[in-house]
Amino acid sequence: MFTGIITGLGQITDVQDLGASSAYGKRLRIEAPAGYLQDVAVGDSIALNGACMTVTHLHDTAFNIDMSAESLDKTTGLNRPGLINLEKALRANDRLGGHLVSGHVDGIGQVTHFAPQGESWALRLLCPAPLAKYLAVKGSITVNGVSLTVNTVQDQANGCEIGINLIPHTVQNTSLSTLTTDAQVNLEIDQIARYCERMLSYQNTV
Image (cartoon, rainbow, N blue to C red; front, side):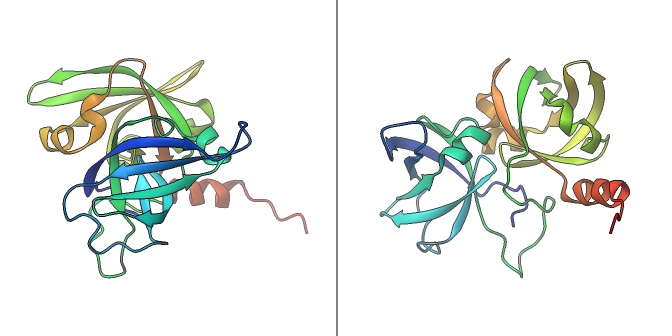
């Protein structure tokens, strides 16, 4: 489990194919901030742009993960070098600063607007239609692993556009600062919304 509070910025520096076809995944090398890996061991979970991955090898300031073809198909931005958000798995005695996040990407969103607004930044995302029922004003969503509050919701024929306000601290300390119009992002819906939908739709046919 995670909280959506980013604990470091990493850099994918190398991507290697694990096989000769798209049925195979990729091995990533990620450079981490100085000291970030001091309490990390092989087998630990780290979320990369919101996707939970397992550390398979440790270097002095970097680590490797192996991504399956399935994970590559369900995420964006993890198949090439670039800046990414890092979050270590939640410990039982940690503060829950954001909201409960599983590290399982539910869909890929598209940036429709990203621009300064006062001291902050206004971000709008077009989310896939199947996720629309889980999105609510003042609800939570993770965008590339960052826990954020939904300010506006507008259902459209091709999906659901949500509006989010990013404070300067978020822009300065996450990879969201690199977003541009039409960029794709990993989305994870709120856990509580997921379970509420299941309870309300469940019909016992046994």
